[in-house]
Length: 394
Image 1 (cartoon, rainbow, N blue to C red):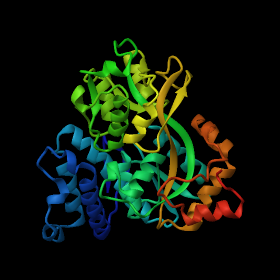
Image 2 (image 1 turned 120 degrees about the vertical axis):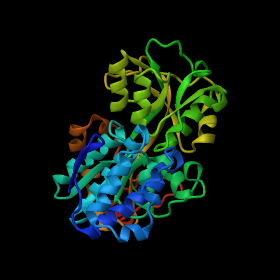
Image 3 (image 1 turned 60 degrees about the vertical axis):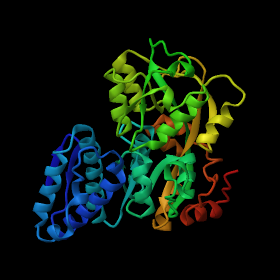
């Protein structure tokens, strides 16, 4: 069966009834993970369809029920779940090929999605079929990684540690089956505004409409909170503009529905906003001695970097202090050690290939590739490769 819509490119769906029932089950799970905190439709989608009803339907009827319900949901929720179901369709199709590996990334237009696509391209040249699938935020990808439904994912080091230990975004819901493969590239993320905005300092965000409560990437809210706190501001001081995912938040900004968005410096979405509104500008962290203590009290493991202007960093118009971290590659504990070792070897030996695909890999430091992340064990496949080759990460 072919399903094509505005959510994503054409995807080949499974044809057998058993495979479709499996897809339905995955869809139900993704709905619960992805949208249950933002379901204003009252529909509940597949989560409310009784098992006995499913048992009486053909595979085609099941798929049609899912598709009809998707299109009955209001726009923002429909787009978010549509992206998730397409991602699951890709994973289901991929599962039929034993050598196909899936890496779940953040939304299209993010740095994580671009780096995931680069990794897929390099591994393809080494005989491994690796699919990079934009799925939204780590609140979606990490539980799928933990359950072994995807093999790899890219997230920030701070969030990986929080997920493994069950803190903040994953409070009471630790993800014990995620493993560290390696440190990839440093990144920064901050509040950006229109270039001609009267918002110049972090304190100027008081009373402004800002992107908030992004359900697929709740970590962005924590990063936003941390930076607002450096100006002694909190949620009560701003007008929250809610969105399901980062692309929707940036769309709100471009349409004039919000005044500021927190997102990654140098990402495709920021470049898109920069072109659409005639220029953007990142808001600097205030110059105060305790600013690092403030941000790390809200998002442990983060830091502050001085970011310099560069044509690939729209919005950085002068040297600007911005909150940062490092993107790390994770694997499921269930991912085969030989698969992880092959990817680890590519990261260590093919740096030039990665740089040729995406310039962000210029920031990948092979001396820290094997570095540690608090509360997060290394995958046996990566640890074995590092040990065999005398790579310490120090």
